[in-house]
Image (cartoon, rainbow, N blue to C red; front, side, top):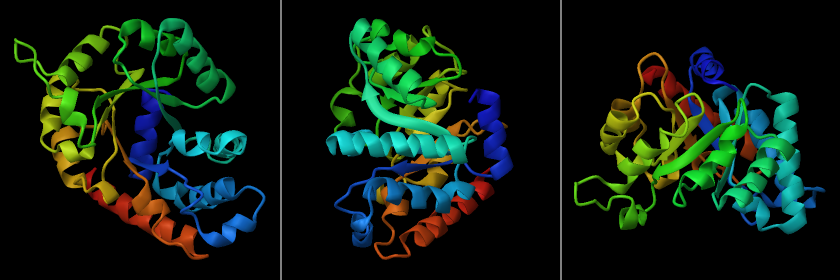
Length: 271
């Protein structure tokens, strides 16, 4: 999915919601444990219920890796289900990969060739040669960690050089030498609030993947006030737990759909 197609989906559906598929077998409704693949069955029902209200899905790879082979099978089945039934939704593998060149090439091959996801989150700490192998795939997006929503983000990301440049700003500036806003996005946590102004000064047109609304307490209105790009939106806002775990009964998917619709309506007003 290219930038133009992504923007078109956002304005046609009046939403920039991404539903995070952080599927924990210990948290899904108990009645699903009797199915052949509880994790996939949970995902399938969540996807069917929320698809009208979002433009992207973000399975967090850790929640599948922890299940060993069964987990990877559920992950691959989820990707295939999305590709076959909802081909216009962006699929983001939240894997936070990034290693020396040869290793990154293998990660890129795994997610972009074998699993055929549309986008992949990347940790840029090891520099250019750890990121560029992911950039060799036409139509695929690289999403670099820039300023995250967790408490520990202040440990390194906000540290300043002697010139007063913060580390996240250096990441934003340097990485734009490797790719433009048609192939690269950045992760910026919703809890960062007015810091979005600083982000936009350095990266005015890049799409931002924004986790942290809902269960983590980030403000959607604040994110849009400081981070939205006129006529393109420029935001993909993720919500995971607040939607997928809103109910634990047999009506879990219906409730998740209602929660996603609530967010979609808020987003439509902000657009």
